[in-house]
Length: 392
Image 1 (cartoon, helix red, strand yellow):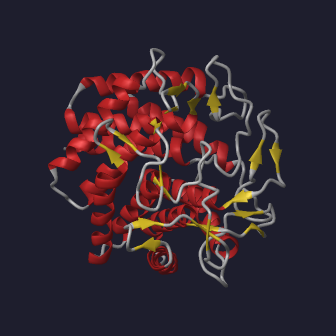
Image 2: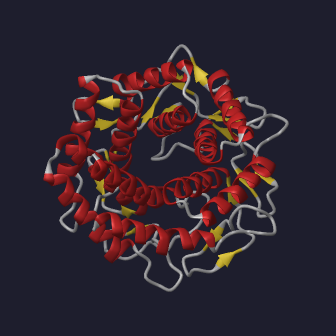
């Protein structure tokens, strides 16, 4: 039943919404849809969302084998290769205008990781050597320019010429962080997908090192949460809990563990403890997952991607533990998504977020941070995991 609903969600709501935004004139997808569902054909096109679109449609083709998804993936790959890559200084731009011309030329390791993620998935379904070569070029760039050997951390923000700059784009909550959890979990995600496409001993070593960093530096054993913002010495610089990132990171780390066949009880306990903590601490009576806690103050906003990642995270926790509590959490989240997060207007997809009073936040429904990735991946992960469970 859940698999059927996830496939229906993916093929009848999520992917059709994004397919309608294909820009045949300038490439990529139209970059902005306002809260009233008006398509802005001159909206800026983000580097991160373009890479996420490439991942989504490549993965959708890999799992569902529908040619229209591969056609869209081909379209997105061409746009990324032709317009998003800086062919002079390497790496992908932060932002393009609607014509595909560079608008914000800064480079961010977070953005490079998503380009690598999308390219490796595209290679998995097409076996195009040029896509793998581009992914490996980005990997080399991240390792040679983006990695700080002394701290074992990845740097964050650079200008176009790869001179390090203050981390404006991945800092929030009134701080500018030299190291972020967000960048590190998505490097782990990207490298794991690259390993699935092109396993090497060097990449395995990098992934093992990254997992160790997550456990020893990012994970907070006293709270069973992840730290969010750090200084260069890995000191946690703000008492902040990001519930969506925690449950997302739990299943992403577990995916790396399974992919590399790592046997480590401490890691296993971390995954389970994070999952129970989110289930017991941040889930509300209406089934939803709230956003974050800063300095003891809870933010009760229900963000679209947080609900989607929680469904995957709790299914992963159920697979690990067999505890029916996690299936109950999934039922609550899915009901909340269908009744509150869904934009039921004709042509709608998901609202960005729901305010604590239960009304939708009047925020653009498509923009450089909102893509098909979180909720599309929720459906794809559940389809694939349920199929694998049924076959065993």
